[in-house]
Length: 167
Image (cartoon, rainbow, N blue to C red; front, top):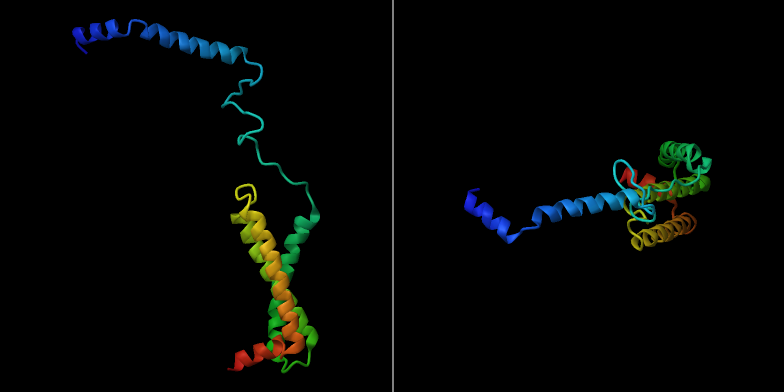
């Protein structure tokens, strides 16, 4: 910057440097005397805003290790149930039909519910989250009723699997 430009800037803004120093001092003084929002190293943390951490639900065995074990047991039990449905011919074994139908519906419900919880959390999607939760429940009940009606009024899942396997 040459001397003429520097003097022109000083003439245009005589209090610029003083104003910058004064505003910095005011901010520091307010920060030091403020009691409503204490300074926290690493940044201010305001209560009741998006800065609040997510609250953890209370611990429960039914949502912890028992839930995980039930999901794995259900998934593993579908393999021999499907094999039994292929081996048995006709609807001679309605209990296998019922267990396979209920197992498939519960397994599908748990899988879709896990996707819903991961991607449509009610904290982020306040309207769509609960709608999908109740929609999934309604579809699961409808699917369970459909499997029940198919097993009692039609050929049943075992015979359906056998016909599809041999087709």
